Image (spheres, rainbow, N blue to C red):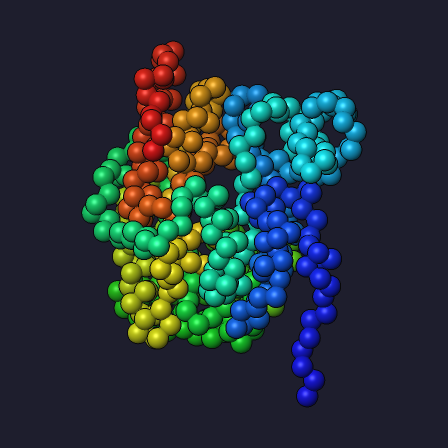
Length: 423
């Protein structure tokens, strides 16, 4: 029987073109680092090119400030190589140029009509994925730098703090409903002994679904619900669950292979909890509330996540935990807690304030526009460096402060004395 042999050139010949790459991977990866990773391979067959494939398929966006100081995301494309100054008027679009390694990059015309030089807020995406849990160990000198850059928190030998005691959360059930209209708390988990969705086999995915069936049957004894296979969902059910077809990126990086085989969603009878199986991650728990009660949504996630953790441990496939990183899944953007807390806020004045981005940076939260005018999506900027309660508290306190600032601006007063110190 012939052995598998991947034909490749030298590391110098295989080093990718990162000139137009605006991900953290593109910012961090060097030829020397690539050379060190080049011949490494995990036990399940993940090589370094698998890790950086996402960033090569999707070169990434950057965050810039628009004229009204709101955050916008723009995609960088290869631009003119003429050194004609930092601004160039083309098709009535003022392009903002960034020089990297003697190359010039311009903003796409479809992305933005005007941006200001000097307001670059850094890459939006990490630009890499782990094919399995061992990837974080084997390629640690790369992943640790990406994690530190994205989360702005040092990877140390200390075990990350974890706190699921929802009673430790202060507030979250008292947001002003005139401004806070909706909230969502979600958590992702990877299952031990299985590759992540970008690299897992068809058989692994089906085994993961079998494990999920058993664990969710136990969960149903306390919280009634039902498991639905994606391939059996009607169009109406797909609309209710906001389920879209796989994106081009998901298809290119392998997450959507054999779609929708062995993908499923579990929905609680009372509608308070939705659990996705074998999508971007092995498991994703989501609790949404139209009353913007973050405390109740967080409580729902904490209780049921811990139950599932115990069930999977009994099935001898615990959730993946790494000593220096905490909970890990395929994306380094989710290490630590895997927790996302978001709120939709009605804001008219604050998005136009010149100090907004400074405020958001100090609060360690993101605020992005939505399709609805004056409705903004506010969420934690990172998942690593704080406990689950700590991250949720960060969002609760941040949202309350943003609402207080909006009220001040409505009355024509300034907000200078409300601007916090760096958290």
